[in-house]
Length: 260
Length: 326
Ligand SMILES: Cc1cc2nc3c(=O)[nH]c(=O)nc-3n(C[C@H](O)[C@H](O)[C@H](O)COP(=O)(O)OP(=O)(O)OC[C@H]3O[C@@H](n4cnc5c(N)ncnc54)[C@H](O)[C@@H]3O)c2cc1C
Ligand SMILES: Nc1ncnc2c1ncn2[C@@H]1O[C@H](COP(=O)(O)O)[C@@H](O)[C@H]1O
Picture 1: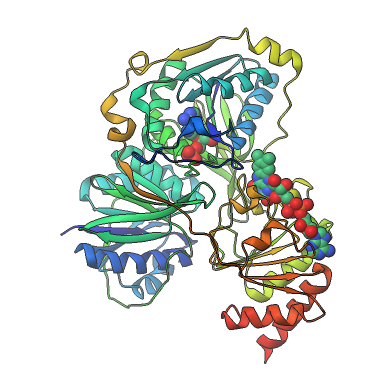
Picture 2: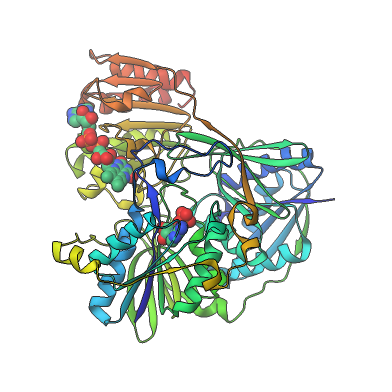
């Protein structure tokens, strides 16, 4: 089975982020970056399926070189077979849908049986990429999945729904986005880290995947940021030490603010 | 005249609160934009929604009914809505910014090649154009965004907008349901209810009471649940509590959990690590109960109680019960 996992490199939540004052894009070089935490579950799920069914796991990421390679290398160290990095100046500033468009073009050439994404990225947090990608690829789009099984050319997933889940069966190829908690991601071993250095990472340009530059980047994205300001700091609230009356004071606060 | 569509999010035909909030927001801004407000219903039967939808003032309702919306996940709805949008060219299409709503929004946007914005908490009309406010980077930065061109697809966050009644007598129009063979490539074989119904889920709750490692064990989540129940609140949890297996993952709030901005967020035995704050710091009112006066969560609070949660939480629950009774 040919599995492609889309991973994104994101700024660490704990790091301070700067937006370019001109175009409001994230200054990715100024911050500490990590693999999008939810994508670690996607990588693990792909490796788990490969352990079970055989095949190949390819890591696909879109973003500037060479930093993005770190996210790919991390996945390779965990056991993925190869990486594909799509990078092109034209892509800078792409929104969620433009991102999905780029990933879709790259995926068309990779001929996957299964595409796995994270349910959301911690920087954009839109959760828009997975279903948009499924539509562009004309594959079933199964989002927010907490269990995957593959058998007889079919994928069966547990898709989170309010208060429970739906069991959904779909034909392959399919696009699946996974939630945190679907598995326990493994740790990279020293051997894994060493062997990752030998594994191939293809670096593709827009031309390589047949990208129409008018569809991507700041200009091609159909959304734009017109203003970005730091959230104003919050005023210090009231803090009381419980002397047996904390509950009553809290109840007063809740009542005054009409929550009861 | 342009149209402002609101796609009704409903549970078995009954509109959710977020739908009424969206209709109200839509009514305000469709007026400013000179648009007609149109409610769009996709589901098995519209009858359960008719009366409540009409109370929130749409000029018209488009109704697409099919049992297949239930038996195949999202794809039939996406195809039906994308077909309608392509044909009728509304200027704005609003969805609920919930996992389901965002799925529909991104699917429709990809099919009709429209711009889409998620997690919108504020709408404004400036120079005749819709401007959307949202917060990014875990609530550290507020941005204002635009969708270029038309249609503009926007996902409105539950509880960010106020539902205000303004009854109308909307004209109803039944529309075609389009379901391709592709849409049938995925089918629901079973639905499993894991939790007792009754408590709102974290995504949509106007009030959330969250528990953390300070609870000391799974059995003590009962304290959080009891407080949640007197307030009609949903229950959240920190990652520490979820990873310890004390509460289901769907309830996790934070960077790798849900991002919420309820009217009221009560953190019980949660220290307020940055990854937790990233998921809740845009909540309108924040309350914390923690025995450590230096816990970072207190930097965010409107009201904090420094004390033992095992004393404060049951007492406040009891106190609120009493006050509600009287
Ligand atoms: C990549 C990454 C992603 C993460 N994502 C998330 C996320 O999505 N959500 C999340 O929550 N965390 C996340 N974390 C973890 C986060 O860093 C913290 O470890 C976690 O939030 C701590 O949970 P806690 O506040 O419940 O526990 P603790 O930090 O242990 O705090 C427990 C608190 O309870 C108080 N307490 C103890 N006993 C009592 C008592 N009897 N009465 C009153 N107070 C008491 C203590 O004073 C303390 O402040 C993430 C971490 C990483 C590295
Ligand atoms: N630039 C990117 N490169 C590769 N995958 C991405 C990229 N952006 C988003 N994704 C994938 O899409 C998922 C959802 O991201 P988002 O829609 O941005 O919240 C992520 O977990 C990734 O799997």
